[in-house]
Amino acid sequence: MTTLNPDQKKQKATAAKQSPLHNERTSSAQGLLAFWPFLRPYRRQVIYALSALVITAMAMLSLGKGVQFLIDQGLATGSETDLTNALLLFMGLVVVFGIGSFCRFYLVSWLGERVVADIRKALFAHLLTLPPAFFENNSPSEIQSRITSDTTLLQSVIGSSLSIALRSSLMLIGGVLFLLVMHFKLTLILILCVPFVVVPVLYFGRRVRRLSRHSQDEIANVGQYLSQALRHIKVIQAFTHEHHDEQRFDKAVEQAFRVSVKRILQRSWLALMAILLSMGGIGIMLWFGGKDVISGAISAGDLASFLFYSIVVAGAVTALSEVMGELQRAAGATERIMELLREPSTIISGQQPLPKVSTAPNRAENKPLLTLSNVSFSYPTRPTTAALKKLNLSIKKGEKVALVGPSGAGKSTLFELLLRFYEPQQGEIRFANQNIQTLSLSDWRQQLAFVPQETALFDLSVADNLAYANRDANKEEIQHAAKLSNAHEFILQLQQGYDTQLGENGVRLSGGQRQRIAIARAILKDAPILLLDEATSALDAQSERKVQDALETLMEGRTSLVIAHRLATVLNADRILVLDHGEIIAQGTHSELLETCALYQGLAELQFTH
Ligand SMILES: Nc1ncnc2c1ncn2[C@@H]1O[C@H](COP(=O)(O)OP(=O)(O)OP(=O)(O)O)[C@@H](O)[C@H]1O
Image (tube, rainbow, N blue to C red):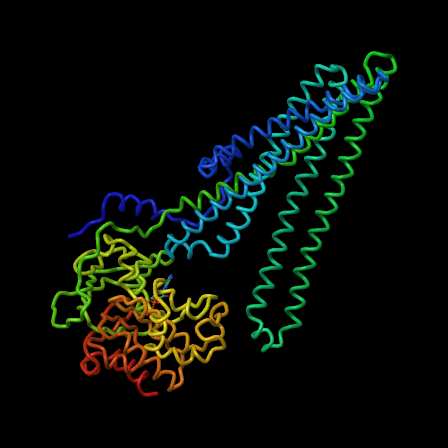
């Protein structure tokens, strides 16, 4: 008997705890450290960016001294040579500052874009490995919006806020040091003024941020309403619901407008406060400093450079207080992204190679190809209701098995387990006597060609939609499959034949045409086991005949499990299984079951007499 390896068991245990994603608050440092693994590959760029940051901060701080030099040595002395020298020094500092800023901006923004691009790629690659159960607990649109908004926030943080925070911290420390050395009394006045500027800025800044989030939510609501209305435009028009929808949409837009106006008002207050308070502070300082210049205690250059450093310090404090909130939010975003990346997959690929099975049909062979022993399963969202109960079944190579039963009997669930979208809680499924959980997941799924009831079409050309099943297929193979599935003819009648783009959800194809595309895909995949969920949609007789013929071709030489809705499928099947409430209640041929199974008789009457 094959068993799972310890690694698989451990991963399964962790995965069993799978729960909806939750928003946890973490400290900014902790949260931001979490993206270090994504920055690590770009260590060199990080070092360059930090160097540029330090150089620009130093150049900026030196500019203050340059101003002092320019006034005291250049202007006050009345010597033109001194003025030229002072100006040359000043210009030198400006050039260093300019080039440093160029490098800093380029490198830091590059890092932001690069890291976020890597995170997006890693997230998508990881999401593709998560089982359908994960998406039942976490709605795809919620995940999608989280990925886009969280990564955009991260991009702005890595690409600007983080560098603003570092630069402002350097400026603040450097600026205060310069100020203290230059003029102790004025510095004290300045430090006393700082809270009067910072506190209101923080207060209004926080309100603005809260309202911006609120207004973003309102805009998202408008967007959601809009996309829903556009998707269901035919329903809206058929029910002459336009007026009502217009009113509801107007209401949503007006609500978004009201929130935006509130935000704008707070922002305007913020600007007013910042200007009045900071300029007021500078005025007070100029008054004290001006008195010192008049009394000759300091030079005019001293006062000018002092003013310069005060503005640098005030700017740094304001910038820091503004980006702190941003960094906090980014920490939350990073944590949520990491949470998604750490989400374990419940479906773990095995290591065993696929057992060798000859692909030639050989009904005489007695060994079962597929065996289900004691398989019981409940969906994770409905753990107390068994969708399949202690199912035992073996299917021989080349056998055509039809599954019939009332709606909700568990027919599709059986396919989902075979495809390993879910794992049974009890029992096992074997392929050529090997538990499918021990096989490589992609090798195993390569053995199955699944034709779902609803054909998923992508917004690609017809040829690309067909080649979805086999990306190596060439033009001839694609056309051959389309001919076998009776799709070639209608494809040629499309405006650009095989190059015709199918709209989102393939809206430009009829139900029967879509099914034939799905059948052609299965032919191209050329897998030995066919899982066919026959469509019940009412096809016209001609279309039904074409689909039926295509199916016959597809089933040739393959082991097939067919959820049967058509008389022909049931009659042609080697065996019919009758499922009810997750159990196989009877099996046999059509005529046998007509004799022995009351449920089948009822189904047959309903199906075959109209
Ligand atoms: N993703 C899911 N989560 C929870 N319950 C589910 C899920 N899919 C199906 N079920 C439930 O499992 C049971 C079996 O459903 P299943 O789709 O296998 O039935 P079916 O025989 O294929 O029906 P139909 O012929 O109508 O497609 C039903 O009670 C159904 O409500």
